[in-house]
Length: 81
Image (tube, rainbow, N blue to C red):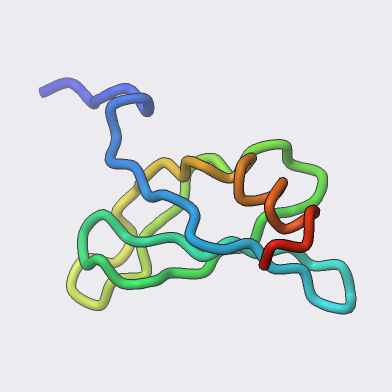
């Protein structure tokens, strides 16, 4: 059995971007497996969120791709959140 390339992995769309007073950026995504919100760090040095592991209780550690971060970041910068 061959592993799937990352572009075929499930996707989780960014629902929200936040930056705390210390400048730490996070994204909240809708998990493709449990359909709940999961929050992940997004270092300001990284242009993309990339791949993340799920925080699901039943399926922890499953990998998915995060999408939509650029639009969400532009919304955040524009003050629409």
